[in-house]
Length: 329
Image 1 (cartoon, helix red, strand yellow):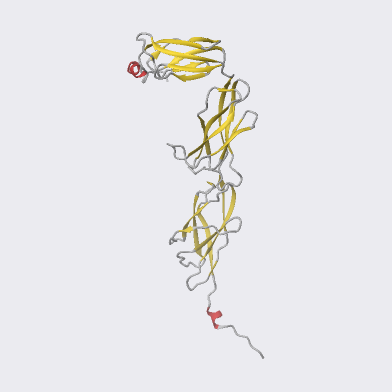
Image 2 (image 1 turned 90 degrees about the vertical axis):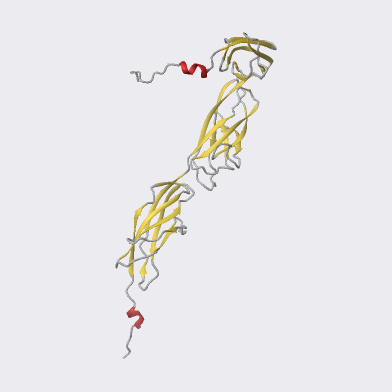
């Protein structure tokens, strides 16, 4: 009669121990796309084995193993893992599995532990500057557009657009390789657009929407601005600003001629081409004052503005009354 026997090695091999895996801290419910993410887990053996330096695999939503830096295990079985969140925005369900393959005792891998979190696109903000005013209707002009990521990411190569009141793109540009001088991460470009055909004030906005294939998720952003348009210049207005008490020319005076804002040169003069019409004319300079007037422009026109020296703001400031401590709030 045949008999069967069990190999001695099988008889001596102890039954495998089970590993358990539980979450201690993290992942966060929401995190910026691509940001560093820390997760603390606890690995234990059902039979109480010490588990120095266990192996923990993190498997992504697509089944790929996620690169992880695993810290040294603590006596209570806790282990900190450091990894990067996905660079795209969305909801993710990763899983963690613990293994321990060294020592005389065989440990079976733990059941998967779900790690669920949402990644958010990086917030962005826009700025528009160097907006000329006014611009001749239907002429082309340039504005500067800047874009910054809240995490100070490089935004070089991204496209920004200028959009009109009808939602039509009227200009676009590609952000340069370097941030604007004096800023840490404001990437910018000059964008050309054509002024509207009608005279008046037109509204626009700069817009950013990242391309679908962008490597890192960023949020959309907008920045409104307006542009004043005028008719084509017909006449040259020459303005001279003089101190009536001394007869000296006054330079660097801000001149407002209707919608036009210009400054006198060192000789106290400026020349500006404008359409015919009636314009309010006023001046502004700290320490200088002149009465406003009306300018009737029906041909090339010369205007002399006589003003006087007045106390500067720095001279006035010590005499201003402070209301600190008064009972009204």
